[in-house]
Image 1: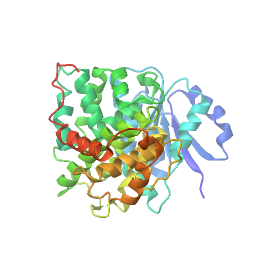
Image 2: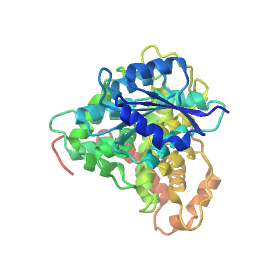
Image 3: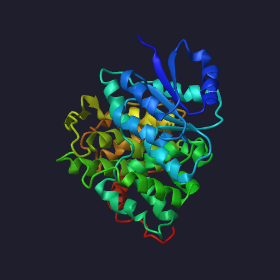
Image 4: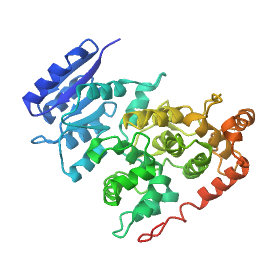
Length: 401
């Protein structure tokens, strides 16, 4: 098996020399190539295979954001990392769209190695390289029709925190993007178990507005594969209903990650069904594949690339896997699975999700579920109803609460 290959780009020779020295211990595992600028990096990429590119941001001629955007278009299977010092907020947003991970200088070599090793991991399966290529080409996801209005409303000058929180906790693509950005010190330190709502509050409305504005222009007016409007609507409603319900199912410690995982559970389906003009992809809606890669594998690759917390990724990966949780607690994965199966009994069911009444009965008998005096099927019906009214119930701009 060939070694992994990493390309490091910086216009300062001393920085490249420092990387060579500090990464010497990985030579047995990685082939490392060092380039002095964006043009040289693109020439190297054109003739050789690389798994990861790590680039400085502020470089003469072609800056890091432009370089990584070009890599994303021509070589989407290459994971893209920014390693840079202090940069302006506008440039940070460009990086957020172009890259996958964002590290600050100086960065401990152990942290850089850890990030690169995370990005070198591929999901098993015959189509794993295809799943990485498709996921690697995703810079953002379009808002689904049911929530496009609240997302667009964030661009109004009077948009407030309540509107931003509502949009981020109901829009699958925006939630994923903010979770991605929250892992970077460019955007300030975040608690390890942050909820989407707390991330929005910490970033502030202007930053969320910039993210929405930067990603909104990446998609055509109707970005979805023909004939899938009903499936897109059902996917969104099921995800939102599950996110509502898992707030009751999950323990307080698991709740932030469980909510995020419930909302993102079918992000791979949305990535697989979102197309740009002239997209040549072979999409099989019934089989749930794009170019042969399963939607779930695409989603897991996307979340891994974006550095979404591992408990969230694991719960998304195992959404359709039967769970037998320990009696001490459901954890994130089983909580999401339980909420999903409950919502499958409602009119917000995922049409491609299936039902497992025997497993659901077992999960409902779990001590964590039994400890609450809750009619879980009624709670699922209420969550489905809330999801059905969520888009029109968005807080008006300029209001609070």
